[in-house]
Image (tube, rainbow, N blue to C red):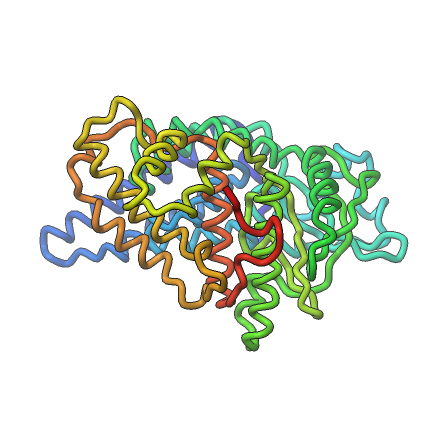
Length: 436
């Protein structure tokens, strides 16, 4: 992949790139509607052009702009062209050239990489939205060195503000909804740019989860790390995204899938602290089929006030236990006291349909994620409600902010297990299933 020689760091430069992209998207829509008049429109073609134009711009800017693209790649409501293109931000973004990496090292650690390590790869072996990874050797050990892109932390807030209009257009949500969640997203993204904080989270979570079966974590090196650099052991293996493409037996799929499920179940129900960035670039599978966890940039602490109502959803029958349904949906701000009977009726129907889809792995002792058509069911549900006039008139955002990253974690987990086609025991062991 072609290396990037520089990153636009000034607000004017970055804003100009976003505005130019917005103009391109607008032109694409004009072309689409012009063709539609003559009966030759192709919505898939429009989505592909917009996805390409937006991704190209955001991958050049990197940082918060590209991170938002990465997050949107996990949005089940987006057209396939967007999710496929934006998924590249997870582990296959254009890397920075070595001179920029050296500049970061000198600013952070006072030395160039070759003055610290016995060897240091000239090219990145992995590049994502916030930083890229180089392979190094130090005192006979192979290390992974994650280097943050220059200027990313400083431009994060302005990036989010600039990308909002594009996100609104792509995701087809109201400004009120986006603003409601923006603070939580900004807070988590700021944490992801603080590598000193990430190092502490990584060490803590690794220690607390190291007893789980078939899972491995790297050793971290604080003396070779800083606010913009993290150094850890190199774990030999195959990136999850590549592993699922191999000629795997069902037993191999099930073993890795079980480890992944248990890892998330233990974090959720015992630690109440969750690895909130479950995408294929953050996991690796070792030759002996252990799951390596490579990144704790996004970690979400689940408040007790959210944990209990959120996971109570999987234990009740929404259609029969209406009192408990109302209590939970009120606690989670899915319905409010000001909702009219008409609004409540449609929201009950919507959330009943939604919960029936996402709760399936929890209410079965064993679950086949390879046969789980979650995305297709979500799309079908979206079609059912997309033209509902009551929903279209609603401007208020629904749901507590804390649920954003819980939702993201579990949709991401389901997607990983689905790509693996794993059959998983979902209720094994104390602390591996929610009990009210």
